[in-house]
Image (cartoon, rainbow, N blue to C red; front, side, top):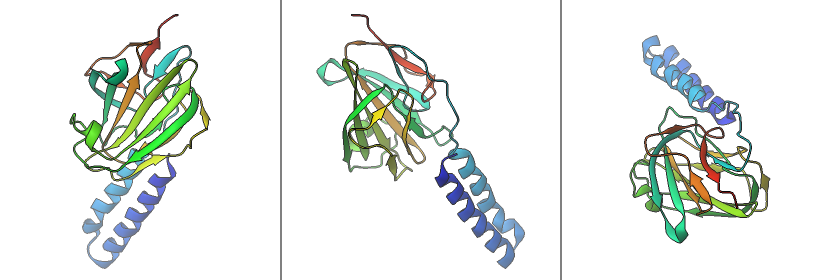
Length: 201
């Protein structure tokens, strides 16, 4: 459980109790339901991390695009709805070489334009003879991107690195040294689903 979920749940519960006491009990029910939803939304389950030369999904959700990007890279876009786990994980092990935050719009995260126009946080991880970039992208509801690491930190594949609150999107950019293992429509789980396998030299 991400600690934010407990804070939200306590706040909604307090509001529900106040409304229950000051008006009618039934009027407080929606706030209690929101409190339960926050506990559900901010869940953070343990995951089995695949071993070997693989790139794992940094987020739970649905693959909405697998497309060519600049510099012979492939962009894999993952859409997270409000029912998905929103904790983000490192796709590969290595050193966090760069973190760049960009302000932007709050378009629906499933739209293609969200990749370049929405608020986002772009993270570059340098691993063993490879470099993987992923972007945490805010959505229509999300207004806060959380990233808990800093440049220079060392992470293992599947390590927790942050989260995006409520509906959102994560884009992963993989170079030509990776064989893509997913396609649009697939469901993936952060830290445990394999997005790509490293080609043998």
